[in-house]
Length: 78
Image 1 (cartoon, rainbow, N blue to C red):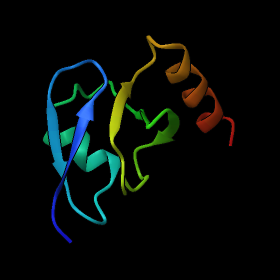
Image 2: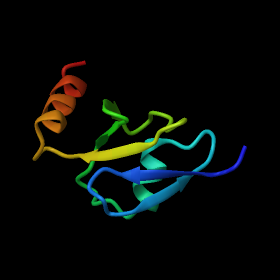
Image 3: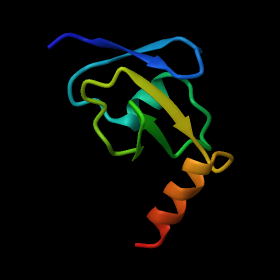
Image 4: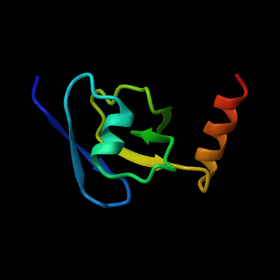
């Protein structure tokens, strides 16, 4: 399967992702800041181990966003 383009929700451009690519790998390749620990993939909140799959749009999350705070609180509650 070929690489596909993933668009960043903030308009910062696109990143290519192949099958089996994790969110962490996509964020690293895109040069996301280390404070990013999750993302919305096509509107759904996910952590770094999530496979990007057929994603069309990704929005990076950190503690400064409400969804980022919810994700961190949920993850640390386990």
